[in-house]
Image (cartoon, rainbow, N blue to C red; front, side, top):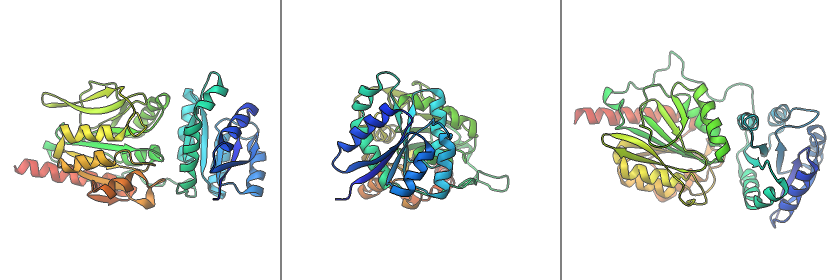
Length: 359
């Protein structure tokens, strides 16, 4: 069996030591070298050709983001970011994901040695996912264009601009950028949106705030008991499951600190199942890039309840795990490239709204 060959880049000798011990304790991976800064790492990459790189977000001698941008432009490879649990750390992390990093790991602020030891399984799993990820050469140009004045989305019937129609989205690895590319294209009168993205709780608010600055719709971290209005997207906080509930004629958000489902909280399955029960045929499901099966059975329940479901296609996924599983179980109606997802979802919403008007 060929082991996953990992190069660790971190200016902390302690972190390098702990990560080395954790990675080398796994039967299917090994550390082939460690580097205290990007300049040394650059030479080691050339000499050792690692499968996966772990990279601290703040590095001496060269800014970590500058190094990542050059790496993904000249020698694309899977990169797992190691990020501190700070506001600045989250902003740098999101920029790193934008530049092409596969995923990130939150570094504990206190007692780092024991903290990272507790993350052994998480570190190992993220490295395995990174090794399988689809890596693309980064360019300075935007991957997808935002909507221009000459590009018209389907005109939505007035009936659709209500809480009757709703879009339900699930994503994991690679999802931060996929969600951005999807949401940035939506008009301010689109149906309300609920999102479950696998992410630590210290990052979900920063993620929502970042999207809110970029999008025409309003994007917030869900707080619970909010009315789901058109043009609003609610992202599950990293500490809770997000569910769809109904209060009279309105959809509302609900949070639950119940046990993790499929090892995740928030879980996509939990959100999808609530949408199947509460919204039925008025829901449109979207499952995006990510490793594992979370969301597959929940999307099947949505499908059986009358919802119309989309899955991101393999070519545009960083990891074609969750969408593939949803397709396998029979919960998906259409498989769509990411760049076409917003237009397809809105077209379907318009058709559903038109049918409701005729009825």
